[in-house]
Length: 134
Image 1 (cartoon, rainbow, N blue to C red):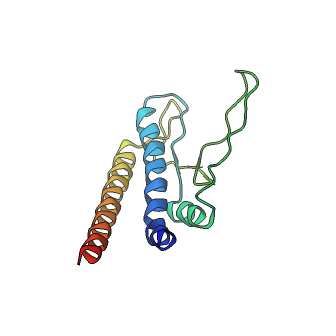
Image 2 (spheres, rainbow, N blue to C red; image 1 turned 120 degrees about the vertical axis):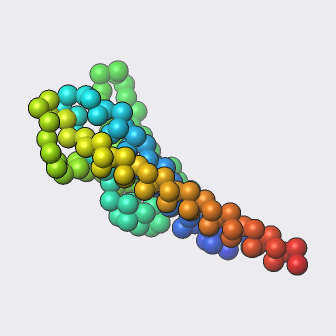
């Protein structure tokens, strides 16, 4: 029974994970709106979700061990999909490509969809409990 329940909720688990990671990426863009030469990044949600659904969710992605503090971190990924630079709509003098209107809209849209996924999961669990209790 537990395997069936895992399969039943797997899609929403993956969607919440990808949306949470994307939210962090969008928040990073907003936080760096005044940083010179910062390039805004985003990820294709459908590609990241597809990748998350096809990979084994029980295995966490391995991080590289750094032997010195000067070593660079690996490129940021969301569910194994590398973040891409957002196309520049209107560049700034300091080279920053963050458009606050776009970032706020994407941040809000992602947050609303995250909340909708939580609501759907909540209703599915309530329906299962109602079916079990009779």
